[in-house]
Structure formats: structure tokens, C-alpha cells
Length: 241
Image (cartoon, rainbow, N blue to C red):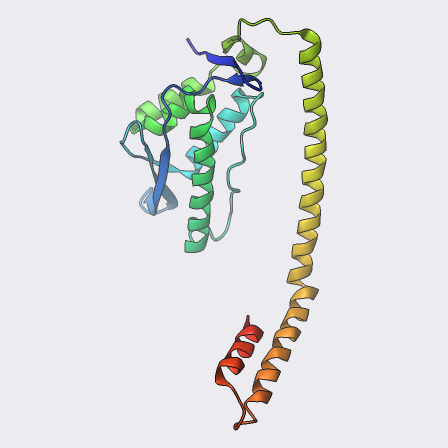
């Protein structure tokens, strides 16, 4: 019964859009406990627009869904979840930062024409009963339409495709993907190195520059007849910044 349709668009083959598009909000991260306070975790209120009924999910539920998507959709790029963190998980800044990243992740899921229609994703968004959750979780984990078998779920266009054209497109995409991958790795390395320098040597240099501006501001205050409070405050503000 599971099927995903590929259609011909103006730029070539593309996934057919989800006929029932929706969005999903993630709100109200709340600290909760179980086993009489032995275990503590953060719960998020997840509300899909086409259902309108919220469910409450922990990070481990998002992690389960992410791994199911990776296992099933080997031909689709699934973005990473925000990373796990062993310490500081209940600090306000960390919780807010994780919530923002989960929202970005969820926006990608709901806007994707295939991922948004996956049965396991629907189970994640709709199931509010613990017993039913476990049953649906086991069913998703026993899914046989994964890996190469996933191809059996595809409905392909009827239009005849020129084999040479297809091979050229695939080769061009492989060249692009490798170049993109190498470029992103290079950019990541350069920016990481720059961050390291700003946290170390550059930081001291900027502090010296700030102190120099502060010193000029203090000097101007020593000439009362001609001093300008607005200018002095601006120079001092520059130094503090």
C-alpha cells in the first residue's frame, strides 16, 4: 500500500508534492520526572496543523524517528538532529537553543514531499497512547521496504527517458556532489580555525583596541571647557563594544 510518486517537472524528475500539506509547531519545553523523580527529562509539545491535537515528545523520540528515516530513505538526504549533550541539558539557554534547532528540523520534515508522508512520521505526530506508541514503533522497526526494497514503493513517470541523457545528468550530479562536499569541508575547516583564533589571540587584540578607545575617552574628559559628553560617550561605548 505504501507508494511515493515521481513525476516529470520543468527541470526533470521530481517527487510529487504531498496532497495534504501541513506544518508542525514545537513549543513549551517542560522539565518532567518519572520513577518517583529518579529520571528527569525535557518534554516538548508537538502540534501538527492538520490534526490540531498536541502530543508530547522527548528528545529520544525525535532521535528514534531520525534513525528510522536514515534507515529507510537511503536515497534522500535527512538533516541531522541537534547533537546530544551529557551535561547542562537542563540549562535554560541549552533548552531554548535545542528547541529552535528542532523547529528547523521539523520544518524540513513537514515540507518534504516524501518524508512528510512516511507512516512512522505520522505515528510520531499523532500517537498519544503509550501502548499504541510501542506497537507502532515495533511495526516501523519491522518495515521491510528499506534499502533497495524502498525502490519497490516508487511510482515512476510513463514518459520514455533517453538513457544517454539520464547518464549525463547522473554524472553531472556526482561531479557537483563531490565538489560541494569538498567545498563544505574546506569552509568548515577555515571557519573553525577562525573561531579558534578569535577565542585566543584575536580576542586579546580586540581587548587592547577597546582599552585604547576607553583611554582616549578618559583623556577628553580632562579638558572640561571643550569636552563633548556625546562624543566622549560614543568613544567610550565603542571601546566597551
